[in-house]
Image 1 (cartoon, protein in one colour):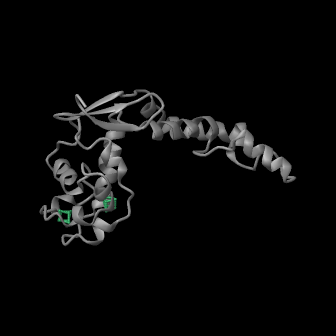
Image 2 (tube, rainbow, N blue to C red; image 1 turned 45 degrees about the vertical axis):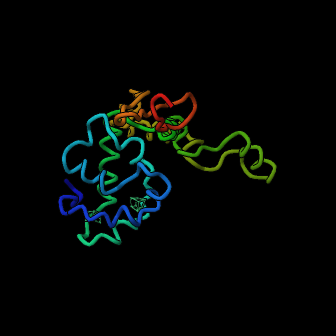
Length: 180
Ligand code: SF4
Ligand code: SF4
């Protein structure tokens, strides 16, 4: 375990200072660390999609009396979730952009038009404008197995009793109460 979350003694200080926890009551970083420690993270997870809400602000870590590397723990939980096919729709879109354009935020036709208007080349000197470099990016993504992470899309994740995590067409994952 690269993070040192085994040092956590569940004092709750991290949860009390977490700005994300203030916004979303289900987001309890202390509880997520406990689940990870107990090996429950890979089950139909109560943490999804909430673990992706962390902004990596490090406030929890700065206030932890045990010097737990909480953010490393969060990143590890996220990575495991993605490797289990639980990638958020918005992240999947960004990943597909990488394949298609070599950039998470590609140059759009509107931007090209503005560049021309400003007397610039239509396309900036980036990977997007080079077939050869784009091929190299794609090769790297394939060698690292990144392409395989995009193969499976999980439309619904059971969170816990009474809660289901759903993906509406064209929208982000969100939690809804069953029967609500
Ligand atoms: S502040 Fe540190 S020790 Fe306390 S619950 Fe959070 S991670 Fe665990
Ligand atoms: S790093 Fe994440 S878990 Fe920690 S305080 Fe910030 S938002 Fe909360």
